[in-house]
Length: 363
Figure (tube, rainbow, N blue to C red):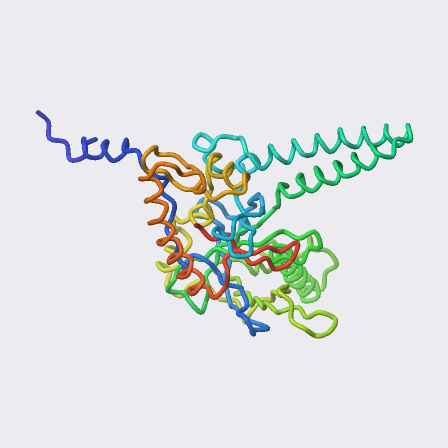
């Protein structure tokens, strides 16, 4: 019998075929760029270097579509939390998670019901039926509120090195993409274009020519995000004060390039390790399955039933073994949550403002 050096062994297949709870990445504060302000802190500055968002792309930005929804305080102290959309997020494993999203389904159902209520409202107004008009006005508002509560929100994820904590390796920074363009993604893009144009203008003056096409063939505009010849970025997060000078939970962000051109690392091997790190955005911002999200949509707390290998609602647990498991995990989860908050100095889903919600840490 041939003795192959590598083989598909029974113990490997036993591991592969074993039924078990989905293997979610354990929380590690080192995976996240902490841009949050502590209580009493009005400003903080971080110095970072942008990496390609993963080892297989040259783009610094990753678009992530999420639903920011109301949840039980047990899941997020402020009562809201973000979940990756199973329908609109293209690059998740749809073979595993499918294409259906309970939040999208509710959003569409509520929208359809709102449209029907609007038709009935219009008819009631035409007929002068005040009682029906009042009823349908409430229905329109009710379904509109439900639809908006389950809408999608575009986030962006950036992978970077925090210069103050280089030993942590690549960190991920997630934020909403704002309609006013004041989010980090748009700030970085504007800064990149400005520095590029400045270098072109300087070259035109140096070579005394009028058009970029007349510059030497070997001329390359400045690329502040280049890993070899680019620059670090200085990120300043400042607290917003109201008209009476009182601090709010809202913050503003400014981003400028820092210092002179420098490589990602003086150590080429270290730079390669950071660039090719296998950890991706979905390892730290965990995609939840349809069954889990459906329980969230119902306003309940998901719980992994070991006896039946499926997600169930904690509040509906009836079997004594399941109840015992719930009690044990409640204690473990509370200890886990406190450890996270202590590590990052903030509640995991504290909403900054209506267009800039907070980090969605794994739970």
